[in-house]
Image (tube, rainbow, N blue to C red; front, side, top):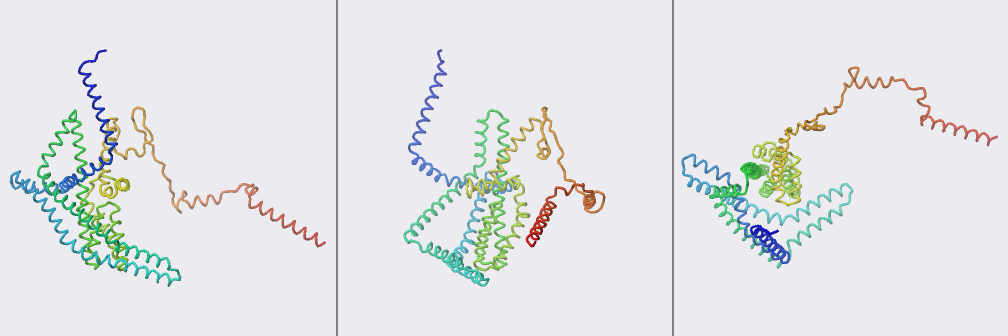
Length: 460
């Protein structure tokens, strides 16, 4: 059978592409280390671009609000876009300057003293615990040994090899310089993204409509992307704002309560509050331990304050800012945190909830569409008492078994009346015929009589 020229060319093209792919895969496998280094270099080069896109995504609500405000006051669109982008950049720079001006000096003043006094605080705390145990008549040798080990390990870490310390310091300086350079480039990328955001959105939709075969698919994808964007944007920006408020409230209240290391503790509490559910514990435990070494009474005050602050955050501040941005029940929030913490570590704790919320939304939409095609109800409560489904698609329901309760004392059906009726019930005539208690009593009695008879026989 003679093949047409068009089919022959297609087959030859497929064969050539397969050969090229096999060659590329072989080259990658033979030079895996080189490929990994190249991939790492590309990732490092794109780090600034990714950082800029993330900052643009976080500051987009600020820029959008400023632009709409300027458009409302009849400012031209081009000028509004430029001014709103400049305003968002100014907000970011203001936050950075405030962090450097207010927080960095406090950390520089408190951290060296804290590191220097930490061995003494550990030793003092262990000595107090040892005296308490000795006053109770208990041995405290293990506490003394543990105290010596901790202080020696800390002193060894502080007094490391000078060459290693210098090398580590130079490495950190180089990393800091690279981080600052990436951050500056990220700000420039952020400005470009905010200025050209309409163009990027238009290009993305253009590609989407070109790749999809029908209009319905495009509409469905855009609908789902909007919801996922709402989930991510609402959760991330809302959680950052909530953590900022909690950090400021913590600083103000701890300053009023005269708690030591106020700035460090407030910074820890504010940063860890970004993590849902476990964040308050991650921030409170090391802070409480630090205060326990410094002043146990202040530690108790801090624990009570953190409990009150987290209740205010969980019931008042958090719901007002976040609302129901994820739509996840509490169980799935905990599940997503544990799962993504195992898969992605720290970033999984931060982004696990919106990621799982997006998956949960897509799965729910898929299930609801399938149920809609089968003309079945979509509410979860409609399936609680379902026992099965008929061949024609009709759901069968059964009422759940209920526990029947009776009055305690009053009435003929009360528990007291049932107990009295049970006591007044006549017993069968042979109720104790095969009773183990009576048979045991009979055996004991027969044994006693036999012993008495043997005793009499011996005396006679």
